[in-house]
Image (cartoon, rainbow, N blue to C red; front, side):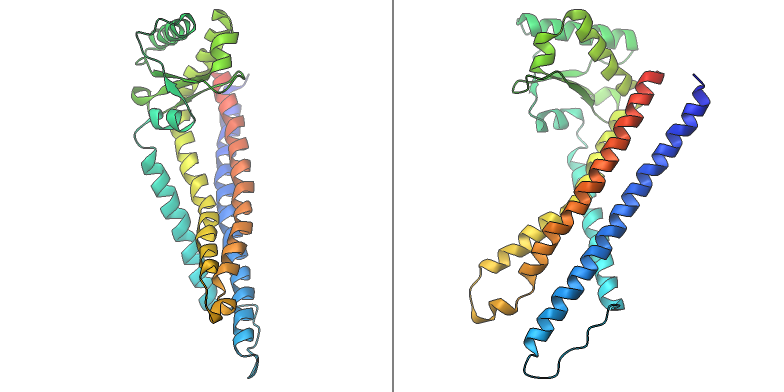
Length: 261
C-alpha cells in the first residue's frame, strides 16, 4: 500500500468534511431566510388586508443579514456548548450512550475477561489503561473509544460484544479501538459531535417558537412565530442530512486510519 498516497486521500476527505459543514450552514441560512421572508410577508399582508398591500421582494438585505447572523450565532453557541459539555473526557460520552462503568475489582467472569484484554492492549500500546464501560441494554456486537487524549480515554463495548465474543475475538475488537486512541480519532469525534449539535440547534429553536402558539388572545392568528417555529423544525432536517454525511465521511476516514496503523 502506498502510504503517502493514502495520506493525500485522507487530507482530501478532511477537506470534504469542511465542505459538508460549510454547505450545511449555507443551506440553513438560505432555507431560514426564504421561510422568514414568506412568513413575515404573509403576516404583513394579513395585517394590511384592508389597506395597502405590502410589496413582495425576493431580496431583503436587512432580513438576510439578520438571518445569517442569527443562524451563525445559533450554530456557534450550540457547538461551543456541546463541546464544553464533552470537555470532561470520554466518560461523559460513554455515560451519555448508556454505558455502565466496569469496576476494576469486578468478579464477573465476562467483565474480568474484558478488563484483562483492555489492560493487555494498554500495556502493549504504551498508553494509560482507559476506563471500561459496558452498554447493558445492547445485545449486538459493537464498541467505541472516546476521549480527548489517551489520558482521559474510555473504551465502551456492548453487552453482546462482551458475552458473545471469544477472548481472541474480543482482543481484535479492543485492539481496533486502541488504534483510534493512538491515532487521535477520539478528539475528532468529540469535535464532530459538537459541530453536528450546532447545526441541529435550529430544530430546538423551532420547538421553542412553537410554544408561543399555546398562548391565547385575539392576535394569536397574526403571530408569525409559531409558523416560523414549524419551518425551523422542518429546516432542521437539513442539519440531519448533512450531519449524516459528515458522520459517514468520518467513519470511512477512521476505518482507513485504523487499517493503515
